Image (tube, rainbow, N blue to C red):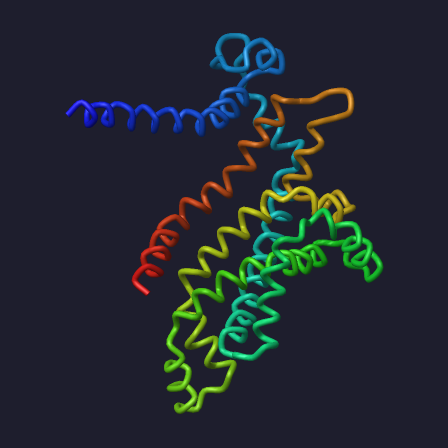
Length: 275
């Protein structure tokens, strides 16, 4: 009885402590985004009251971020990259699963090993090569994201496709379907649960990525939201009040995306467990 009472006390207390640790950064961002620069330096943890409270941070950050243009730049790169990753990774994984040869096994091994290579080890040769062929632009950036994001996506698709009965494809062949029709009309619709997972992982990675766009994009009109955020931090001054407001603004689209995709994540997990 004593141990059960301890568990009833310790478990909720531990849960509340962990919740507070995770919520604390969000609290700091939100509260300080409504403070003046002086208010942040005076009391970081306090609520924005009195002379330290302001609503001007958000419109000023919105303007300095050139949010409409940078938002659509981020949207174009994120959606374009995610779509090409889904298309090519799903097709590659399907062929690797159905083609049971030493070559396909070796290629799958290469994709798995590629995940262990840090991006910093290849970024300079990659950017140098892309510069030589004129790919230092948004389309070139999408092409590079395809190469960098394919390994994990192929591995995820590979594990899911192995659970799809090959008899479905054999029945489609008997009905006269070609390879293209088998994949797009039979296999790809069955990949919806794992496709949602792959989409979420890549969207959140690409939307928040700073380093690769910083190396590739060299024109202001092409800059994404993370690149625009960098200009709040100068060599001699840091506009924390605007940076935090800009950070909240930049978080809103990805949070909305996650909320709408959440039910599909749960469905994907349950579907996968049933399989």
